[in-house]
Length: 84
Image (cartoon, rainbow, N blue to C red):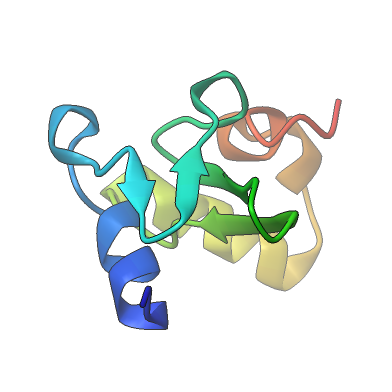
């Protein structure tokens, strides 16, 4: 059984160390990167989406932009989320 800890912990691992499968969930690498991971359970037809939080110092600037509402849409992290 896949736990929330398993999913969150996997999100912070280096790309080479990330598990491609968590329980019945298989990572869709075309919809995943170092900042978010998309998993699908074909048996139960369920989707799991994990967004990795603050990883590096540059993420703190994005956090500040999000908190103030100023300039966050121009940040690399925002753009990498497929919002643009």
